[in-house]
Structures are given as C-alpha cells and as structure tokens.
Image 1 (cartoon, rainbow, N blue to C red):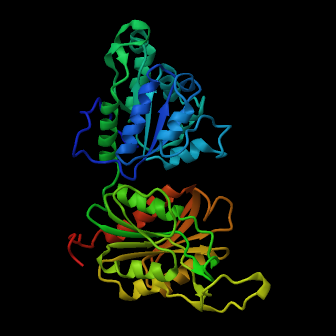
Image 2 (image 1 turned 120 degrees about the vertical axis):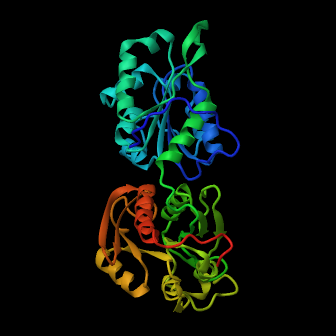
Image 3 (image 1 turned 60 degrees about the vertical axis):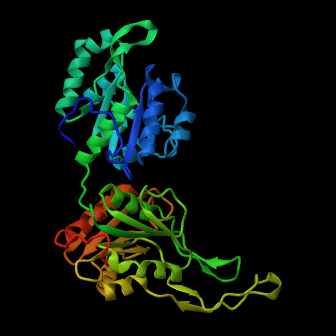
Length: 423
C-alpha cells in the first residue's frame, strides 16, 4: 500500500507517463459531480489504462451504467449480489493497480474510514492492496463538517491519496468549497501515483510473451486445437508493459493488447516457432504462456473432407518443441519461462519440464480445477525453479502475471540491459 498522501497534482500534459497496462478501478458514488467521472474514465482509457467502473446505487441516479460500460475497458459493476462474479469485490480489489473514487461522497468517505462494507465499492476498497485515490465532492457545509475532516485524516494516515475539492459553483446555485477537482487534475494525480508505486524493474528490457492455443489444420475448414483463451498471456504482456518493458506479444487470439506492445499474429505451431525463434536472440525475457500443439496432422487435405467418405485416417507428427529450442540456444543473461498445463501431478511434471527444457522457471497449473486455467479470468499456479517452488492461490490472472514477473525479474537483476539496436 502506498503510504505517502499527496494533494492535487499538476494537470496532465504532453510527455507525461502513460498508464499503459495499468488496471484502474474507477469508483463513482452518488453526487451531482458524477457526470465528471465520465470524463475521468475517458481520459484514463486514452492514456492506456484498463478501466473497470464500479457505480454505487446513488451514482446510478445521476449517470447511466451503459455510459461507463461503453467508455470503459469492461462493463460497469454495480452490486455484490447481482454480479456474474460470485466475489466481485475480491477479484476487483486484487486485480487493481490503482483504485480511484471520483466523486467520493461523505457517505463513502465515512464508510471507508470506518471499514463498513455497505456496497460493492466500499467492499472493493477494503479488499484491495493497491494505492487508493479519493476525490471528495460535496456541499461546503458537509466538506467542512468535523466528521468528514476527521474521516479524511484517518484515510491520510493509512496512506490514501486525497485530491481535495476546489472552490466554485455547486448544486443548487451555491458557490463555495466542495466542487470536484477537474478531471485533468484527477488523472494527473493518478499518473503520478502509479509512476511512484509500480515497479519499473523491466524498464529497457525486451520481453517476448506468447499467448493462446495453436490450430493445426486437418483440411481447409477443420483443425486440431486446445482450450487456451490467451488471457494469461495477455495479462503477462500487460504487466510487463506496466513495468516498463519493451513487449512483443506473439498470439493466436484477438484480445485487447496493451498499448505500445508489438503484436504478432500467428495460427499454427510452425508459425509460432518462426515468430518466436526469429526474435529470441534480442529478448531479455521470454515467457511461453501459449499452449503450443505437441502434434499436428502430417498432411492437410487440399479440400474439405466429406462425411460421405467415412472417417478419415488421421496421422499425426510432432511439432517443433519451441521451449526446448529456446533452451538450447539461449544466450547469457537471458531468462526463459515455460508453462505446464496439467491435469495431475502438477508440481512433479513442472519440475520434469524445468529440467528437460533448460529453462529458469516453469509455471504449472491444474487446468481441471475449479476457476483455474483456460477460459477463466482467475488462475492458481505453482512457480517452480531450481531453488524450489512458490504457490500462488486462486486469484486474478493479472496477479499471477505479476508473481511470475517478480520471479523472472529476480533472475534478470544481474543481466545487463541491452540497447535497442543490439542483437
């Protein structure tokens, strides 16, 4: 948790650091200033942030859920009990790099300070370890009330950032202190907080991440594939960009990629191998999160195979083991990470893969377990290395991504940073 509160930051301007790859939970509570949160949302997205809105019941009296769902990076959340996620506050809080509350009413400030989980927004604030930026907005008399000021002081002592309101026109024609800070000031404060809080331990490093499952053609319309969604690979690319890396994402799926990342689209295992191996020498860290097929049909029928012809004989041949190829040709200082999607003996099989492929880390997971693996937004993994193992319990794939990168960065610390033109 960030422990140094700040007051209003200077407005955002050209040249300011972006929020690429940063996951921001934007909480909107029930005040007339809620309309300004729409602009805050838009500006955050423009800077590359992945914005997840949470609207309180009061906020919905002033602004529409559909507005935020359309402008943000994913749909707006409004209720603990009516969400598709059974524990939305936990997953939203764990996955956030920053939580912003704009506007923050006296009720929200008081509930947060007292630890009273009265709605989804407060529950998320209590469930996160990310930095929190609170932007109060209310009438002057409320702003100046001793209870509100004491609650804000409690939050400051806990390390919560506060962007104080401005003086100006308020609801009902009044003028005074309590007007929500301008969206540009709120976003500038967010940029500053993230720049101070997130590790830039991959700055200047070249990182290649693979994502998705390959598809091996049987005929022009059929193929052999697997269930990989690519979500974990994209989370790794997003996390690496947020830590300052120069990211190349080799992918078989089409998901929103982190701003600034080079995206290479492939389909088959052979295309994946070509894309990865042709770029490998220039990379400081390679994370093979993709589910690359082990076998492919030895021949592809030139035309669609007809049902009337009966079941065809399908002869398979092995594909190139890309991870082993990387291990055999790695350069000094390069860190390699493999993934092992298993249905049994996860740790044992991950350790076997670690030894046989010549890599630094293997991330193993039981894809048959509840909430784990291919189609989910959550994952539970064991990271194995020559030094031992680290178990990451069920959490968001972004949290898993940062845990994997933490382990990889520890092995990169002694490696020199390579110039952009080096190979």
